[in-house]
Image 1: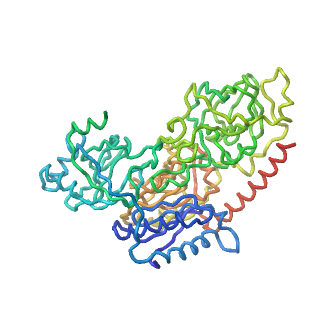
Image 2: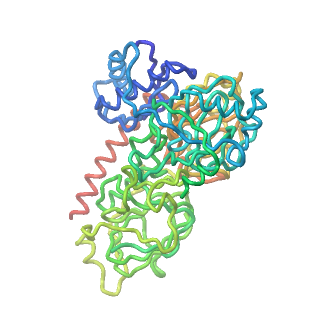
Image 3: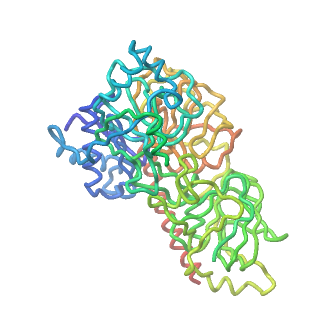
Amino acid sequence: MSAAQIEALGDCALLIRFGDRIDAQINVLALAAAELLVHADLPGLRDVAAAYATVCVHYDPAAWAGDGHAPFDRLRARIGALLEMLDGVPSLQVPAQREIPVCYGGAHGPDLAELARHARLTIDEAIALHCAGDYRVAMLGFAPGFPYLLGLDARLHMPRHANPRTRVPAGSVAIGAGQTGIYPRATPGGWRVIGRTPLVLFDPARSPPALLAPGQRVRFRAIDADALAEYAL
Amino acid sequence: MSVRVLAPGLLTTVQDGGRRGHAAIGVGAAGAMDAVSLRLANLLVGNAQDAAALEITLRGPRLRFERDTLIAITGADIEAACGIQPVAAWRPVAMRAGSEIAFGNTTHGARSYVALRGGLCHSGVLGSRSTDVNAAIGPNAGRALAAGDMLPLDDDAGVVPALWRQVASDQAFARAAWSLDPQPWLDLDFRQPIRAVAGTHFGALDAASQRSVFGADFRIGAESNRVGFRLGGTKLALHEPLELISEGVVPGTVQLPPGGDPIILMAEAPTCGGYPRVAQVIAVDLPLVAQRRPGDSLRFAQTSLADAQTRYLEREQALERLGDDIRRRLAE
């Protein structure tokens, strides 16, 4: 695992870098490294979170003071040694695949028609293509519980809106360039909204609070507006 | 019993040492913007440093104490009165049951802190009582205080007895004879530069922008909040566009969105971001950023990671010594 670079992110955090592009294999390394660190019981670790190609480690420098070396240098050496234990293709402990029901198009997916035109597909073909994908949660971020999913068919890639919408409703399933994701709550957003799921992506009172976990596999299933409304009952 | 909120102030929130351990699901730490002032307020009433207390923004609340309560005010200078009598900051003050405290505006600085002995004991959310206003997580579903709210206090948390004996029966409150010198903990001289280290993408800035980051005057923009401070007055530009993917960011990260106006991420920083990171404010100087308001100027001075960590360790050691000293005084 000598490929990993460890760089400072200020004086209380660092980034472990496995690459700088969106790539499923690089992401698995980042997720596995995060899992390793969470269970390594290192002193002073405040938080650990994987992104596409990096792991962000928040730490208390006071827990790594001493012996004449800067806390960053000591923690970097320790993490570097730990990462030697990662090799080959690591296996992740993740929950089973989750199916996400989505009501595509219409008022729930105002950008679906434009996406289909952009892809030179009919609307039904675009829906079928989105549902056919085998997705994996690369990371959660942007907002609590927001999943960035890998595995979008290249024909459905479409740039973000130049001017983000001021309000994207909770549950909106959307496409931003080569990624697809789901808005957990109403926020401004620039991704192309193609449908809506009735599932609650994030609820701090629930355990676990996030519907999806990093590394988890996801499939989408089309439902009609009546089925969407039934979920709300 | 507890404390009743008669009027909430502009943006008064419950904050503690922050929500740790949930970045992997996109939940940031939140917590106090000026974490040192929060810790000092807690020390002055005998609490753990990271206990939950009130963060006041620019204009404070009006509170009625339903039982005898020991409080301490720190952070930005702020008008505070019980009836017609001013209530002094930076020391323990015993408020009698039935008394009220009315906060006015912060007169210097942006954020004041009010700790109450025993700490606010709202139900925690994901292990913390911090209010993440932007993500709507925390006490009261993550919103700021509203009129009529009750602030719950631990029933076992009594007032310091020696201090309370000074309260004559006709007095609504009594203050300790001693106080904490805000220096060196809080420097409200806003001409002082904010120390920062070069960010990951500092080298991608054009030559003029590299000089500007450490040296030019920025102005804190109106669209600044607990998530981030938008800086205006000096535009920054990359020498060529960068295609970046989302990766971790932390409070103090100085991001550069395409418009050229940098943003300093603050207590409610998201867990990740995809903009170039041109600088990183060192941890010990972040409270000094938190005390500035929209319209105030700000200049960065470059330092090294080693210096930043040395200063952090020195601050923690000094706070530990101060904590011991205050605990001795409270026990007298």
